[in-house]
Image (tube, rainbow, N blue to C red):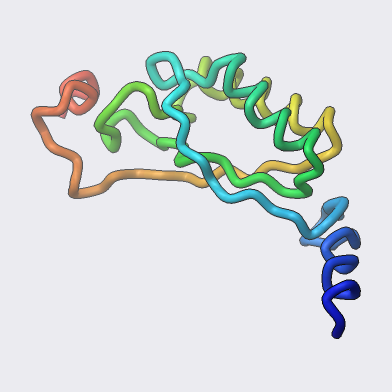
Length: 125
């Protein structure tokens, strides 16, 4: 396959399960520390929307914390309560509005979480 043919293949749609992404360009997770007390913000929605507008077919989110008892800092976004889900809905709506798809990278720090960390204390552990 020539370099030109290989490059053109990047712009072909790709079927992934029930969805068809517009191209084979994907963007890996970029932790930005832009959430507000673990709630995704408008700045995050704009960050992901910009990447979608740039032509990325599939975006993978930064680490999305699944429980307070698995985080060490509040600037990382979570998805364990309704406020966080609403924040991620704004993000996914912005990505979809720009013709792209987004995949959440779920995250738990597990046993490396220190019991004296502020977020662990808020979790009551």
